[in-house]
Image (tube, rainbow, N blue to C red; front, side):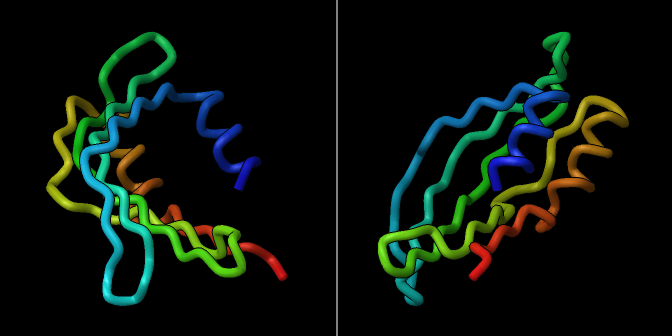
Length: 96
């Protein structure tokens, strides 16, 4: 997971503001966040609300998923490309 985020931060700057914390019927921790993504020059690429979904087993994050809660608001094709990379492609599972 660390490698993924290191690569992301080489090309983008993301800001997250937690809005809500909850636990779903499968005992997963759901954090709804306001996400703002800018390129390294500060241009807005993406702004939306998403859910970070954590499955925790043995006090460790076993699965981390990012889910949509609203349509993407995009300014240009960079945002569209970023959306394609993010859309349910951000799913990590701890290797055993």
